Image (cartoon, rainbow, N blue to C red; front, side):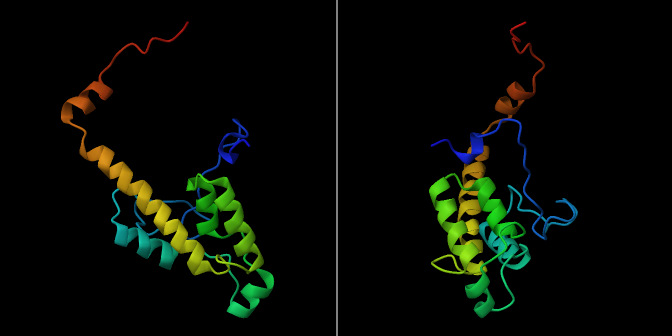
Length: 148
């Protein structure tokens, strides 16, 4: 099956800020986003304490009604960052129904933490091997070889 990432070339989505859909991510509010320079502990703290939840007010209501996936930031970010469509579908079904391993907000946030930590660690590893000459080569003015 075609990954949800590549279904429509004209559809562009950006992840919401951690506090929800209203407003935007901001460098001046360091808790509104996860940055590529954040430590594992910072990522965990930001997601677990600042990511807006679509979960219900009580465990009883969550088990009865499930989460509102459209407003839940952790789930929306997983839609953006998680590459495994089947896992995402399973998380959405579990969280949206209030049943199964991802029935609650904490479980979904924890899954997002793992994914973001992996992504940021990989970015840092690639960044750490760059040299000044690599940066100079990328920043140099050069012909890009356009086909026209």
